[in-house]
Length: 417
Ligand code: AMP
Ligand code: MG
Image 1 (tube, rainbow, N blue to C red):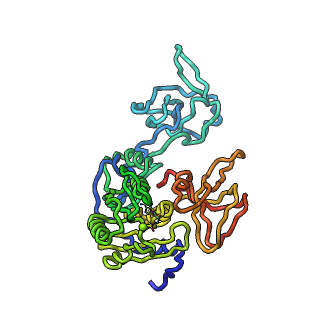
Image 2 (spheres, rainbow, N blue to C red; image 1 turned 90 degrees about the vertical axis):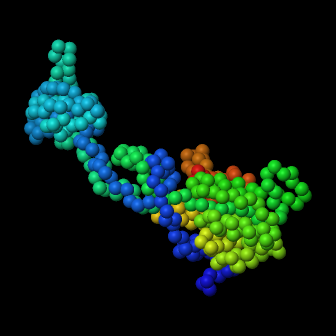
Image 3 (spheres, rainbow, N blue to C red; image 1 turned 180 degrees about the horizontal axis):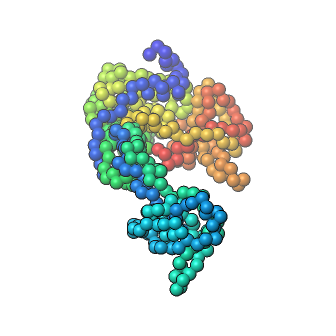
């Protein structure tokens, strides 16, 4: 613990510190593949089949046996002896000098190894029926055929333990004939807000009160991540109530997330409670917004004490809670938020000394390039800045004021959490 300077913990260091405690859930369940969307695969999934399962045509055309003398005999016609449809194979044998009309996906007939596209032949007719073809363009040997096992070989690992299922993955396991798969159980996450000033929706505000918005942003972010949410409400700054709520949360959930009460104000009781009931670190992070952050264990539950300010809640969630939650859900290597450099069209004010996560709008400029602009005022209580934003402009510790046109790092959040 002594390694961690409590006065200014760098973001990366805090992230790495948290990582070492994250053991994923172990219980699994078997679900029909549709229900596996967004869930994490438990154990490896091997292909029970070769994909494709048989040699088949990649084109509408004519299947034949390629021979080396074709180029000399390009003008020699091949007699059409039948048709192969997807689902209705041609059952006969194709000999030299013969071909079969073949549709995309149809099984390659016996005696054939190459398909010529229908656009690359001239047709001769007999009795008003196509009877033979001549090449207008000679295909390469074995062209336009999808071979058995070309995509996946039987026994090949398709998805490894810890893979999160996406729409393409549902299709892929379906293409293998797999009806159900093993996934990790849903992670249970309990949340509650803290603060005497907080009022729940449906109650008129009195002077000095604010509506509890943090539980709603947390609800949104956690729901998108696919966890089972336990919402324990807004709890006043009363040590007894906070204590009982914390203990209920820790006994019911894998992860407990609170907002507010982790700084050093007079009514910030969470710190005392956590020291008493858990092993929790309290950090002043070298970042803006989101300076106070607590992380540790209360009983078996992982605990995240987020700041109270609404923007700081979301920023610390994206920077710390998101990745930790994905790991606890079983993901082996959670994909980081896409991060890249773009030009910022407006000047940016920033003091060196801490990492800033300013709210930005990535947009397609009139010159066709994607650029970013800040959302405007950057106060950590201004939730509207988060609503307008689709990315964070990440300004490193050493960076100071920037002129318009400077290149900045952005981290995309829109549509991800
Ligand atoms: P705290 O970290 O408890 O000192 O709170 C910092 C600021 O965030 C104060 O202005 C609080 O009123 C505000 N705040 C704390 N919790 C919430 C919440 N759940 N919803 C909206 N604002 C909050
Ligand atoms: Mg408070």
